[in-house]
Picture 1 (cartoon, helix red, strand yellow):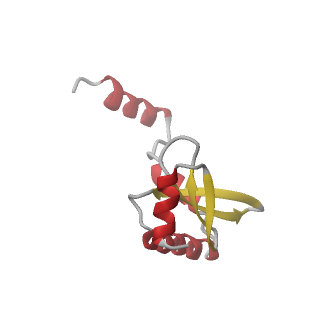
Picture 2 (picture 1 turned 90 degrees about the horizontal axis):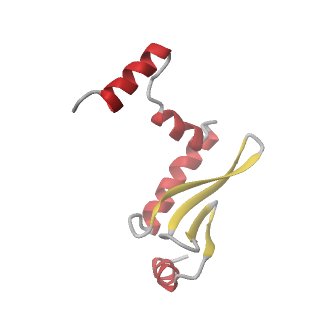
Length: 109
């Protein structure tokens, strides 16, 4: 796939999923912005991870990012699980939960 082909697919607006090879896909959904996705197998299941929206990420950047995630997969790190862990807030106990809730939702700004 070339950058011109990607631009043409995005401009057409036709829902499609086009493979660039090695698990990288360019997806134009029914509604919403086109995006880059990485499909892979982990723990015996087929998974898909969104990398970024187009045109915010170029074809070259999508290929680079996909390679990074595939390298992590070869080392046994599932990128979706790693992404979820980054979002983890560090709440361990009920006291931590209350403190987070009070600070972020109740405390006057």
